[in-house]
Amino acid sequence: MTNMFNSMMIKNWKAKNRIVVPPMVCFSFTGEDGFATEDNINHYKAFAEGGAGVVVLEAHAVEKDGRLSSDQMGIWSDEFIECLKPIAENFHNNDVISLVQIHHAGLKSPKNVVDLPIAPSDYDKDGTVAREMTMDEIKRVQQSFLKAALRVKKAGFHGIELHGAHGYLIDQFMSPITNKRNDEYGGTIENRMRFALEIVEMIKAEVGEDFILGYRMGGNAPTLTEGIEIAKALESKGVDLLHVSAGITGESIPEPPKDFPYNWIVYCGTEIKKEVKIPVIVVNGIRTPEQAGYIIENKLADFVAVGRGHLVDPNWVKKAESSMTPSPCLKCQKCLWFKNGRHCPGRKAV
Image (cartoon, rainbow, N blue to C red):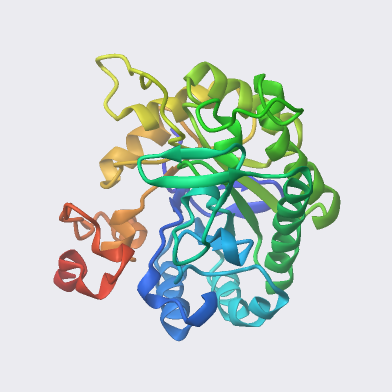
């Protein structure tokens, strides 16, 4: 029987087990203008030593004006390469596959980052205002993603994860809710996928055979049917790893069968897994070894992301493998790791 401690290949790299630490922003650690600090290095060193097979670093902005927050980690210039090298080295020293998530917030960039954010289309709703990107801006941002991927490679990581979920820029292009364009980047699902697929093609052409190209997608885009279509298109363009999370929600969300023991986000991932041959990561609300193990043992997905469990206890995998109980996430109403993980009550109890 396959279990979560079995290895699996991702492209040309062997993941020593099926547990993934997903990308989780920890803004309080980051230095001025997005540079990695000793806090960032130590944070990821703990994950490197904790036993996970794959770690995806938090979202790194590909453009300064495309940040989610003024204290987000950056990858928009070559100056970031050196500060990231110690993080990559720690992962190599511990036989952990490491990917850096690269990201543009689009209309979600706040006012203290940019006066007027860019988006696929003009947007004005619930106090959020953004303007439609010109064709030149589309090409520029695509180049920014490519340059960011090349910087990640120079820093020594195994690959990147394109952030195409959670309502950020790539996801905004995918969704008819935020993409009202009437050119080749809007309208049909084929056109709405174009922005992302062109980025994938550009990166694949430059990074070489050993570099992993992962993609975090919304399983609902805004429907599961379209999510499956997008997943197949990404696979056809050479994406090596799919990480299925949530996208911009439409009028309804996919409804799992009554006997499905996880939420709709995990359900989307398990359905997409049935339709593609590349490895699939499922994520959201999976905190215990029992929950993770069930998914792998029943072949519902190839990898399981355990997020908050690792924030509380970086040795989650080592403890699970030794039949110890990892320290539990206490489910704070708003996770303190977003702004100051030092105050996490669960981590203090470890």
